[in-house]
Image (cartoon, rainbow over all chains, first blue to last red; front, side):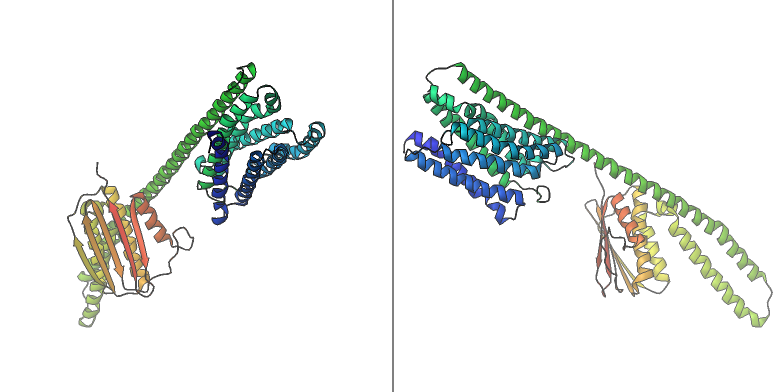
Length: 218
Length: 262
């Protein structure tokens, strides 16, 4: 097995491990939001696996990731809607439900579905950073004396801020970079984006494993 | 490796670094804030505990003063009245048929005087200070024994040690309330009291063979005011108060207090 293949496969293994770990939410009857996220992470693993197989056989997989990102942003927004108890955030999420599909539709018409939709990626990632930050603000202002390290959503938000924050500048320029600096794009994607994906999944695993009173997070 | 280290790559690395730093800053501030919140809650809890203890201390102080005043009143006023009554009776010249009645009245007054003295002694905090909690407790057991309603068994083991006077009063009041409960509610025949001193710890177990009582968790309103007071006093020491209720086989009350050493 060559090093390049190993580097590109490692994040997939970690996603698989995170998806498998998340299934404990069903075994220990975690709150519904965690069980839904667990199901989504299993779906995430299936998509990633399919993407890797397609890449292995030199089949263009951007359309698959486009669909995956649409679903991911909407699912995470839906889950944060139940976690963040702030009416402005709820209004923002409702607005996102309307604007985001319109944006996706517009970008699909303009750029097509086979090309990675960077506008959609940037918008979705920025909204996710905003939602994770809103959750951090909620934790900051909370009167709850429970350690934040026992709150799964603290770990998830931490992971999302790092992952989306650090990959959004790159993914936003991906089509441009791919056209102009192909080798660098490959290098950055393999080492940096994959590292952030691994970090996100490690934080997801931590979130699912940390103990938290099930009454606190719905 | 990149073909060219352009502005784009610089922007990418810089933005990634800035975002990482910002995230780190947010998480660190969250942890610091949580630590501050935790400290604030702990201080609030300590303040509330101290306030409750002060309140209870004041309550006990008032109670103690009331007891002292009642004790003094019983001894000085009622006691004197009974003594005068006894002197009058003894000085009366009565016929031979009434002598028997007079001597009966005299013995009843004597008994009343003894009881009065015992009650006065048992409620007087100064007496507890003078005798110590253990002797006061034994005197209380003696008082119950004299009623002939109970067979009282007292045992002790270990070497006694000195306890702060204020705490001795609290210990004695808890034991006194336990004995009062037994006398009033147990309908038993025996009281077993065992005092054990071990390594700066004293454990007093009082057991009866009465009918027991319906156990209630301490925070339920159904629990008697007496038991609530006992628990509050125990918390003030602080000591551990255990009440084991064996329905039909009596009740076991254990008070364990560890004297704090520097």
